[in-house]
Image 1 (cartoon, rainbow, N blue to C red):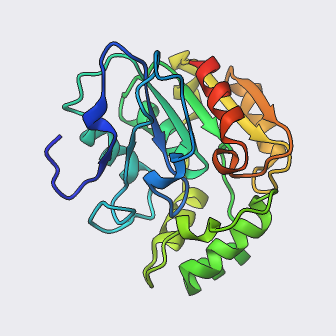
Image 2: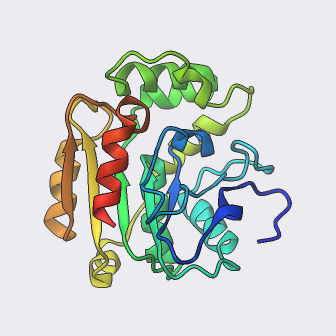
Length: 242
């Protein structure tokens, strides 16, 4: 892992005897989204994150293509000698995780879709706000995705006047997944949903799970951001799934 322009979070702390989970952020977000998670340290390494291009501490330019992001992560992981790696993708990150296994033959131990489902349709209203500014898109997502009032939520989204949010949301909206290929992998797949999440289409959850063997776990009284709304419960749940 010698990409000087790519930020690897907690990779220097990996103990190969422990379980590792690569957390993949949602639209516009970066490694900071896992800061409140606390996995049992006797079994698990600290949460791993690789900031996507143009996000967080990674250089480069964001993409409007999920496959571009998945190829980036698979390439970034090439030098990692880790046979006990699981993927946990939040929102857009869930699509990236699915594409990593379907399009890039990357085989983790399991996949967790966190507040994520395929397909992920993004409304024209949100796309228009994202095209206008990152801030307007963040306001919309927080308004409809957050159930509990939390200060500083907007700080986890990009503040610069670039197209990060628009690119990421367009990537979600345009992504096409080969469901048959995913089904044939027989990969353990779990879906974690928030009971108050207004950004995940439950009809699509039902359609997805009718085709792809998966288990659904619902967290009560949280929305689209359980890693901030109830990080203790989420940490315990994730630990029980891998």
